[in-house]
Length: 139
Image (cartoon, rainbow, N blue to C red; front, top):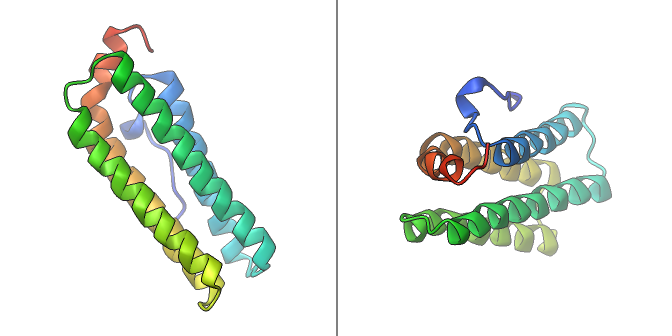
């Protein structure tokens, strides 16, 4: 499993958002660490997946607060990405709740999804709002 490595290409230059993105990377890497160690403790895996999804929702809410506050012109389009993420993580939560799948495999699928989604989201969609956030004094 490839670690989720933070590099300068992910920096938006908006510290509150960059710090949240970095924390997101850290959570994903902790999940990878558990899986690499062969830790299939259901309670521990569920706890960290819940942390991942809760933190993602917290982070998306932070962005959305600033979209509204700063009247971001592409809010509607950006919100579609956030909605898609929330729907997908809701589906994952339902699959976990059912409990009829190989949990470590499902956790890896969730983690890979979160990693891939966030990487693309930062590098494309989030880069678009960064100038507006900076213009309003966030740095």
